[in-house]
Length: 514
Image (cartoon, rainbow, N blue to C red; front, side):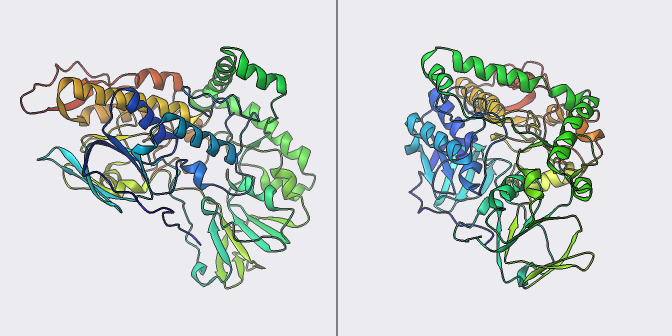
């Protein structure tokens, strides 16, 4: 089955809150904790599922794990000395998020099983009117923490509706399906597929893997932490933070390969090719898995068992395009028909479209999706959008990374929105909205910088690009610089609306360029 329903009955909502947060993954949880830390008590987090976790709650497929080291893929304010390995699996990350949520003492401000159905800006009342599955609520500030990897993307396949076998997306894994002895097809060779295939290959009868583009796959340098290391994490003050900082700096050192000197990637790609040659002896299979674009142009993957899994006798890598499905088979463009019992769709997410944008109506009555379809997906500092007052994104346009931890970027954006809310309260502001000039200048500079990156020059077309062909997913500079640029709210880049009886603060000159 593709698509899920909320798992929990919603609790009653208050009619009005100062801040409404949509989503309870890393982004929503960090927003709640930092809002509370700033002294704000009038906020609510709504989440359509039954608990916190976001993508790590939803993606429970076999082999699910993070490709960023555990020490870095966690909150700076909630380090976890109990990570068992250098790279953590999905259950461990989900347990970490549950613990952070419990320890925060803020779960009473979360409402689970509540679907966000839409929001409209009320210019007269200067607030957001939000519709949810549990009833309406108004908010002065609306925060989208739904994330870019929350809505599965399903390809349009001719005959899919007539297929008699089980079908499900990797993000909606059907644990009721026993794959033992089945003929299974996996569509996709991205980050999820390269984890799923090795995890299920030894129990299925036949495994067909449908590949459109071969990814670059580097070795996964994963290991269990030794007892002495675990002891040091617990007992030696500052040791874990030192380890975290070293990992951060090592990751940051790879930035030039992506944004300024793509030729460095050619050196790394030699290691990746050697990885292929060590695992695969068949020249035909080697040719199929050899990428034909610069390393880094698409997401770089890590795995030690992807290539060995493809060499198994019961696994077939298929590069012919899919023509159509019959009730019991997949037919490729060369007219070959292969019988299938279970179809697993591992084709990623609607990352650039962000479906929540179609549910948010701004100052002129248009949805954010409509605005973005006309001018392209963009925002100011990945946090706010002209025409949509008091709307903040956590993981907004051009905040994704190709090299490091998104948790670092989340904390940076949360700091920006919390400071914005602090300044709104201090100065009696009813509304903040980025000026068109500030937003345009920010994005013009981003796209100018993007032209020399490997994402633009590497010879591929990736999910990083929107319908206008612009990279709207990734940040083309260092994460340290992003944190510095979002360390405090910059009112000079905004239209400021004062509450009746108050005057807005004097506007400094905006610093819109990244």
